[in-house]
Length: 330
Ligand SMILES: *Cc1c(COP(=O)(O)O)cnc(C)c1O
Image (cartoon, rainbow, N blue to C red; front, side, top):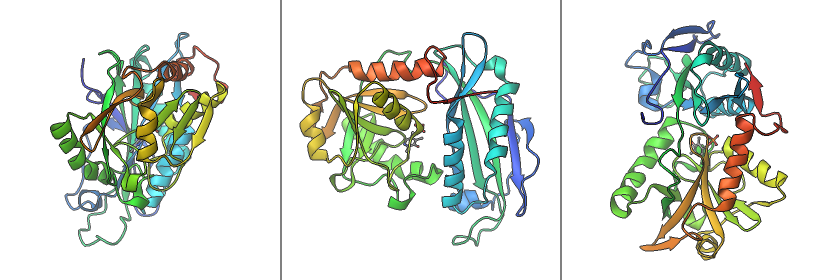
């Protein structure tokens, strides 16, 4: 099977902002983008993206999950990067029209169509280190993806780092530079600790990993950092918390210190997981802190983690009622 995100549909939707208005979106070949080497994005990282999925239901219909949330975040990221404003209605239509064009390519469950809207500054101006790009481009790429858990339910190893993932005011922006800045620590953690990911905990405050939110599940309580500017507000995080409330669990959105995490994680029955669109909810089995390894609960995928993930998948695949109106038809 191909690695996640390496297979693309042959065409993408694209629109250009010329400094005053957006062009009519077009469908063009997925490899047909032309940029000036002086484009703002290539020098000053004026870029943001989104990740959402379309699902094939048993009746053959295709539904897109929580597109309103992703488009709102896309608009917010664009604004926080001082990119031209996107027109959310136009961007939403670009996504839905493109998915409809490739509806027959949306994989059967447990696969799905991963959707990657992207927006970046195109102005050819290498003297604009401290000024925004007046022109920009947005496109939507589609990538059919298989079962993320095809290899079985491996539990992740997380290295706890007393470090920031990105600049504190940029956490909730889904922007390229944040990922580049987190790469060094992640590669070091893989090499030196055989860790899968770094859990960034600046000043002992548990934040998130490079591309997923962190949840601690202790019995009937689910604990995760309350929303602030320092980390990415995941749509999966919000969906899992909503499902947890629906199931009668106690949801605690608050600060979680490394000390509390380590103390609670080792208890029998405790679980930890990462949430994100690509991996849905991935169990964490080991925390690595100051040279020590802490096994989370049994070290195996927890029953609550599996149940929450299954409930979310069932809604996405149309096997459970969409009580919150999360699915959009094409
Ligand atoms: C995308 C992302 C997430 C997860 O967001 P979802 O909307 O759930 O996919 C979490 N953290 C970071 C840093 C991300 O980039």
